[in-house]
Image 1: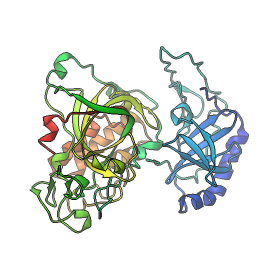
Image 2: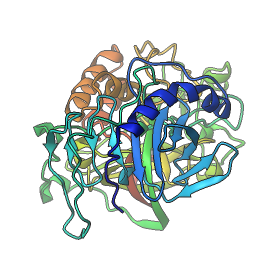
Image 3: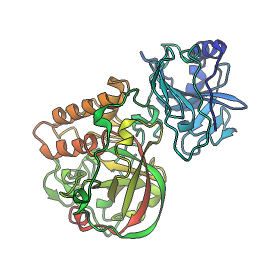
Image 4: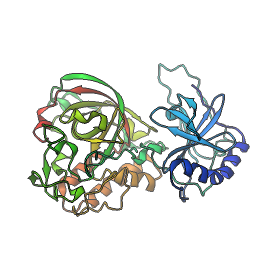
Length: 439
């Protein structure tokens, strides 16, 4: 499908004027009034028989028509547009196949080309060998025309971020389904740090032999760490109990209730993601799955990253293409979707509950959904190389003397290359001993 640029000043002007006028109507649909922000929202342009402008906001995605009128919302899970009265308007609209306009006017085409707001090419098209699609180039005179008023709200995730509440029982753990990477731009430049190191046989000579056990599918990974006692540590939920630890996450304990409901049990910091020597392209972690998979405590899945992001793709996503993450389920989330795995990563965002106030970590003011990575994406305008460096710095400075938590945060920066909401193929596997002994 080809999505050329909208070529009229009328559309840009109408959107800029109508966005502020339509905020109240959109807020009524979402349940609360949106706040103005200093930056422009990220938006996606779909131009087929009907033109749609999909705009990121704090509640999800608002959809405008070609004249800038708010007409509904975009549902990420179904890739469809729903009207103001709940009626279906369009289906099969993949944001990755739309033209994306960043907050600074940078234009990202579905073919991989990137242009500045004034029409200067800063990255040429990347066309797969198997693709027969015609490359669409922007009109330099119009590429900067699709800009919303500076009074519009800043981009955030419908995750939706890049990026889960796990509390079916009283104040259990939450997962960050709203990771802020969901409405992100790709990086406008390539950097040497964005290339995945070439692996050799010796790099992976000590990887465990992972045995496929069941079916799978496709999805994406988010991140969270709320310090709450996980769902799978409650005896009424499973016979295969995940361990919990004291209020600082260090010493295993049993009983006493979750820190998030007045008790003393927390997520153990030993549940950080980890790698093993001699196994470069495989890592291990614990995660939350959808609440509908409540019986999945102790199950394991292999995620193979595709090198793409759910909402946008940049150099950081490409750097982890082909890497495999083996996860073991310790939690569930009522807002985690099918195919989504919410990875336990310190500093990954609290989600709906925050039991980390006693940990001594300097993360209390980080993004609720998406955590430190989301902070960096906003601070660095979603530029891949700058985001990666920023996250490395924040991981080193945010956890004080808690070296274990710091190491877990650095996993997101180093092994996962600061890739927000990376897409993957997954399959159920037999749990390796490396995870079972930590569970």
